[in-house]
Length: 124
Image (cartoon, rainbow, N blue to C red; front, side, top):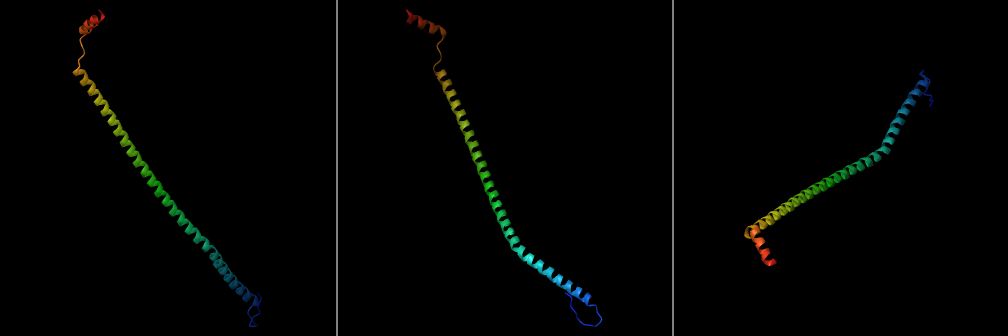
């Protein structure tokens, strides 16, 4: 670090300090470049991995949305089917009630007096 440049009257110590600073700047720059060279591949891998994670997350969200939509459609179909079955049951009940009413009107009940007379005849 101590160089002797000549006897022109300049301080050799000042020149040596200036040269040392220049070497330190060069070393700093080289260390920054080498650190960057080491870190860049890691950052590149991290960014690729991050992009893959985001893509996977997007795919999972799409799948979840599709499943949710399918579930909603199934539920709607089940609700429609249930409603249809309930309507069919109500219709069957109405039909049965109409049939009962028709049977009653076609075959009216005998008056109480006629019932009593018949039971007396059979009893004798």
